[in-house]
Image (cartoon, rainbow, N blue to C red):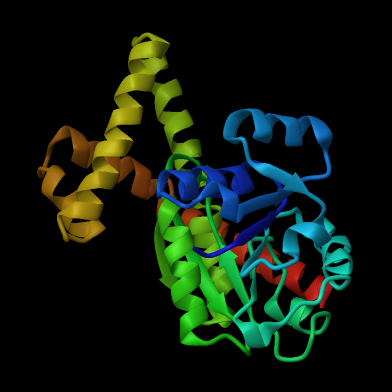
Length: 271
């Protein structure tokens, strides 16, 4: 069984722990480095997982997952350099830290050490995430297969060149916030139209869940699914016409472009 060290016990780290355990990964082959004791105690109480220092957690681990905030990556790497890391033994780093390029790790780790950059998103907390892998210079197919197997426990996995990771961040990394914003607006509109907040919330939530399932399972495009429910001259057509007049497509493009630009700036700032 693959031995996995998770550096950082925040929400993303916990989602990975939960997903791996539900997928049948042995508890004895998981360890977490979490310095904040109250949080460490929560993880122990919930999962009975072993808590350790960064150096001790990484020692002998096959996969070292860096799941800390971007500003905490450098100190974590400083601790990791105290360990006898060996990329030749298929040991590798998996970075879930936003905005940190693989080159940041490669210049601080032993020569040739493999690093896989991952852009996850928060639905992994309920096992419905999408994790996007971007391999570093020294990553082999066996490394990608291993990381894919790990992250498939918390959702779907795709692979892109690292040059596309800023666009991925804009679409799926930040994407849940866009849907939550739409849901928030629809719920409020429902209340203004006379529904109770509880009813409006249930209607909007299930509509989002069901629409997502249709897009995922039917094989039809978003445009075709929208057209199928938009009868000429009907209520949906009236609503869509108003959304289009309000510039919804342009607003989404500009929002995602801003997110992509910000992601690129964050990466450039640490190189």
